[in-house]
Amino acid sequence: MLFQRVLRLDSLALGGDAGVYDSSRLPPAFLRELYELVRYRDLLIQLISRDVRTRYKRSVLGVAWTMLNPLLMMAVLTLVFSQLFRGDIRHYAVYLLSAQLIWTFFAQTTTQAMSNLAWGGALITKIYLPRSVFAVSQVGTGLVNLVLALVPLFLITLLTGASLTWAVLWLPVPMLLTACFALGVGLLLSTVAISFPDVIDMYQILLTAWYFLTPIIYPISALPESARWLMNLNPAYHFVEAFRAPVYAGTGPDPGGLLVAATAAVLALAAGWFVFASVADEIPARI
Amino acid sequence: MEAVSRVELEIGETTHPRAAADADVVRMSGVSFRYRRQSERLTSLKEYAIRRLQGRVQVREVWALRDIDLSVRRGEVFGIIGRNGAGKSTLLRLVAGVLRPTSGRVVVHGWPVTPLLEIGAGFHHDLTGRENVYLNATLLGHSKHEVDARYESIVDFAELAEVMDEPLRTYSSGMTARLGFSVATAWEPNVLLVDEVLAVGDEAFRKKCEARIEEFRRRSATVLLVSHQSSQLLAISSRVAWVDEGRIRAIGDPQDVVTQYTEAADGR
Image 1 (spheres, rainbow over the protein chains, first blue to last red):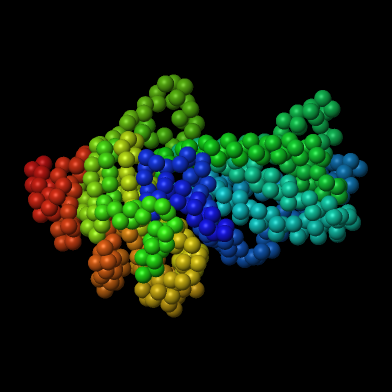
Image 2: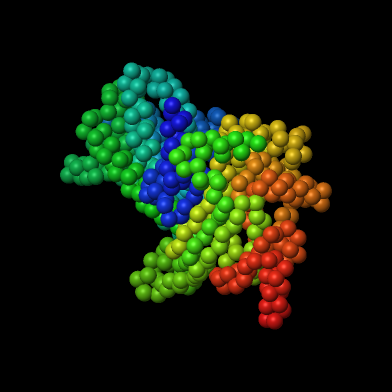
């Protein structure tokens, strides 16, 4: 039943009759990109599995690396900052690690969406592929890594004596919202980075600034009262908080914050998708 | 065999059976394609922004193709000849759906086409041969299920059964090319696009590749072949088009067109 429906989508994507390509009768770009992505879903799975496998094959430590990397980062930051914010934050390690994981997911996914499209550059000038597949597969890879990283997060939570509650069942919500936001941002950046590779470097600088402007390593109470309202304008703050609350505070995400996060995710994804799809056919000519 | 039954299935699904019965497999009418290029290639956004502010960014328009009209019938081997930069490859990319015409219309029956353009471009050197077969075939639009069914024959044709679980970086360039060709031609194509001569592996394997393409042709696949080697085109084409500076200078009998092309080339 579902399979038949996909078949129908295929024929629509081809502009009418199945097996016929007519350059003057193609559906709107944003729809066609979506149909084609569905048609190439097995490619999407292959790309994700390629990334996950090569990551673990290349490093001697294997899967442990994914776990160790954020843990080492957390250990160093905890040593330094738990002294600084003494008393302000209980279970600082958990406070930090939870935010660190969701931030790393966003930062890596958006950056790799750009470089992955560049990797596919040699291909998409020669054969047709839905070009969004490179960004979408990076979000998929990021989600796999994030889910794996939940294991050390939960372990640390238990080890430090903080309690793990049923509230963690909320986690898929902020994870999916952040994924949508990252995909939108990644697609927008990709449209520029394909012509100007130095955008990737500039974006790293922006990411560093953004990281410190978001209460990840420090509590929001560290900001002067007069500046706190500014955080409402920072979407990263809401994604971080929505992911942190179920683990650290043992409560569901704050509804108001979640609403802002959801709005930002939907807007970013819609903008990214429309812009990317509308220039997708020009990308092979620009490489 | 499987490709044939799939076509029948699609006919059953649609209300327009004429789609597959149409004799023109590729039809281009009034097709033009324009590239926009900056006068200098700026690859840095910083530099681009500065020049833009100074008003020093000049965009040059290059018409790679102008008013192309041609149609290729089912079962033809259609050769395209021309100098480098004449627009031959752009023409193939328009048929492949990689580029969309700036104006005019491209219609292809038997979509998706099978490109033999960049053999092995999607290979990944840290993955094994087996993993690369799956990655490459899905890049060409096949489903995992389809690859499962053809996996053995892909490996047999490439003659690489013993090394499929080794990472690709241990392969010689000849082995990689064999695997790439084998994946790309594992499914019987309706339309095959070939860019330049197939220089795949050793002499024996090249013979095998040519035999396979010939087999496709006998079963009435349509082949579009780009080359600047006139001898190869003469040997297998049923018609040839000469593309020069984005326009078709001559089209028709291979001998006539190739003669015109070589005379013009010698005259320069």
